[in-house]
Length: 127
Image (cartoon, rainbow, N blue to C red):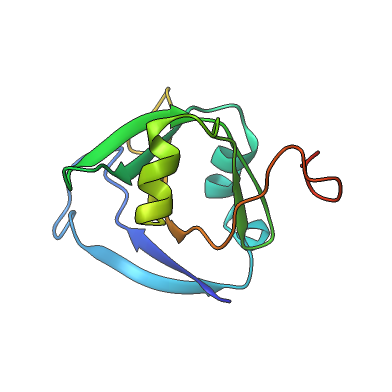
């Protein structure tokens, strides 16, 4: 699976023409291949905000724990939470990671839940 990276123009130092357009698109094989300036947001302890479609169809935004390996994003959600029901009903998530020191330095990950692993699973639960 390839990852498409949309490179927006950098406006942190001021306005520029076409500032709200995508500058280019890159293809990566894994999240590990992201440009180091973006990958550090995945590796540093920044709060991840997850958008999940709620029962009423509106996005529900929640700060959550996550990790990643290769092209897989790992999400930790208590099974009794409403979010779990919503994710099961619509497994498409958007994750936003924003640098608290610079709001123009951010990464958005659009992904689809492929499977659920219980913490009681003897083989994979420890993940």
